[in-house]
Image (tube, rainbow, N blue to C red; front, top):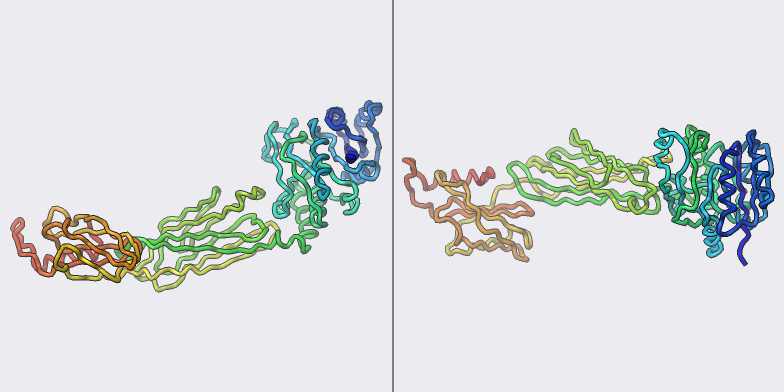
Length: 489
């Protein structure tokens, strides 16, 4: 046997909307066993309009609370259904509202309440719609009742369906000027109950000049603080308001340049556990001898500032979009480690500034590889075309090779076929493609940045180029200095 459903309509001077509301309730695919209008001190036509529907089973009761919470509680006490569907008189239901929510609660007896998405409707001004970032006619999506998301934002509206016995057990709605429904949902969750979300718009939320979402907006900040102090200090909420922070860091060294080595630094802040941040601030402090060339953030809306050896990233988290919040942002920086770097680590700190007026921090020390520029390792060119170099490069490291030419040659350097280090770091260079006369062969690792310079064992014979004597030891040293300075075509 199915549960009985009572619809409680609360009204205060919303007579101009009451007919539409009651007509939508009477047009339900699954009819309610009881419809009760609770009129809280209305001075408009509300009593007369409610009387028009008395023959269709609509009951009318007037109270003088001037308090929305007490009106809802009165409806709870004065109605008899197993399930109570609360409807504000300025809203209207789609025909599937009662049947869909009641079916969900009947199918899952452990759920205390059920709610749905909604349509925006109404006659509010353009400024009012902009204030709440809504558009008339659009669907306002809601979310499952995840406590980690609810601590940030109330996305469950009062127009919902609740089990009577559970609502009574937790004391019903407690009086507040606004956000009393938010407090009610939090109370249900911390009492061990949960709710069911229907991802379908099942009612029309009307926005108008006297709507509570607008008229009480200046009070919301203070009320949120009151609710958070009351609820979020309780043990139930601690996993959702106390973050676990971590920083993952990686350094990828690149090519050695004159005076320094270019590295790519990746810093990924992670918020572990069940909590979500409202915002994250990541600060990376570079030690002397390390310079930032560029910094980017893989997070829409992330703001990066640099200066004074400090990179700061302000990273928004898209709460309550759980799927997007679960993707950690990545801060990518291109830095140059100068030869004067004294071995200090890069310091990174992650600060979570949450909506509960408290801060949490994680600190990491990012050790840099030993990347100070070191002079090339010089070897004589061995007899034969195949040159073997050992213990200078990493396993399977990509290798660039070029020939440094003597002064007066058409080009300062000539690129040679690249190579790859073997599993033990051994590199084999085939010099058959090298020019007949060269000052040196430069072998450059692409990962660790090491250089090996192969010098001819015997100086090439001198020759005249444009009336200038070229060759011999002086020409060879001149070319080697060019190599050490990083010169190439």
